Length: 318
Image (cartoon, rainbow, N blue to C red; front, side, top):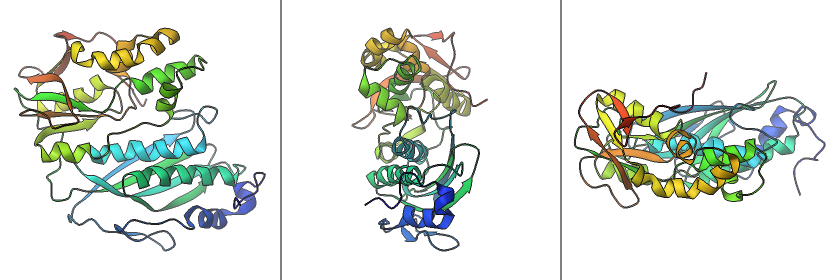
């Protein structure tokens, strides 16, 4: 039996009753020594160093409730945050979540949001250690992730060197193609439509890359060109990508892109929110990674088949 009547709003139920329902019966991983219920949580990271990142999702800017279920939104909020610590070579161990919503939001929707968060966190062996609940004009979700390096050095953006290869783990262009389908009201290509709502980061591959000597790494949140541009700028080097190495990604979205009237190469090169990982290596990449380019000397820039990309380069928050 559901803890809330579908007609009950969060205002009807009350803040603490909602919070109690959100945390009741949840099983924390060993890394969460003290979870929700006190003034603060206690989280253990065996390394002694903690990787921390925060992301915020705002309704109608980062998700739409006429497209996504609350469960989808919860999974997306956790996944995109976890990808940031993966990109440092760390493992996510716990999340802290703040949720703002109008007082008339059904309490059952908050529970479905929480269920999605817990499902995604459990997929990587992490837990939700605490958070906050507040009234707001629209849904706003702020997630902070705590990660454990496991004795590794963090993989930063500034370590790429001429001669390195560029490799990717995960898939590119799917979220952008899915967005185009939703935006144009096309109700086919269900897998791509869902990939826009819930990304699929390659969990564990950040640590694989770090253990294999990755010299730099980031996740593809704003678009491949934009995010590789951050590595190029931080490392002071040029990155050359080849379309041939990305042909499988283009092929995967080509039919959907044609139906939506968008360029499949734009989906692959500048579409964000796939949360694949892209890294540089001095030698061959590990299993699960595929080579898509090389690092060279020269001015900090990202080239595609030797040319400067003339279109947009990716997502801008403002």
